[in-house]
Image (cartoon, rainbow, N blue to C red; front, side):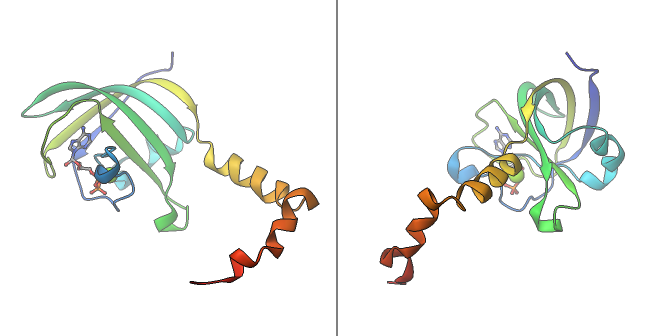
Amino acid sequence: PIEPWFIGGPVIKGFGRGSKVLGIPTANLPAENFSDVLSEHTSGVYFGWAGLSTRGIYKMVMSIGWNPYFDNTEKTIEPWLLHDFGEDFYGEELRLVIVGYIRPERIHEDARIAEKALNLPLYAKYTDSPYLRNSL
Ligand code: ADP
Ligand code: MG
């Protein structure tokens, strides 16, 4: 268990990174309001409770990560409420209590592994593949 932390604000438009189309909508909060509390917490996957002012309280899983849109200098929080709302709720007040930590962000670690592995002859040889060199 972690020391719970509390953040909230109006749901804003994200960059379409979390994705409704993939069935994973993430309700973005204006991160500039709590950059301090975000910098205290490592990138990764968390869980907790979400309160939506007019609707109720829901289970929530959330990713904290470096945002490529800001050259990875700012963090974003991307809470996915585990409930089927069937509609958007942009502008509504969203309150989060983050109570648990699941795992660190993996994509940077994965990138380092791929970067090294692809230098090995075993994998590097596929750069000769004609398939890669055709654009049609
Ligand atoms: P954006 O890039 O604008 O954040 P998303 O594809 O991530 O767009 O979708 C997030 C939006 O979908 C939220 O702002 C909210 O209005 C809506 N939404 C609907 N259901 C959920 C849900 N279960 N969890 C989070 N957001 C949801
Ligand atoms: Mg989103």
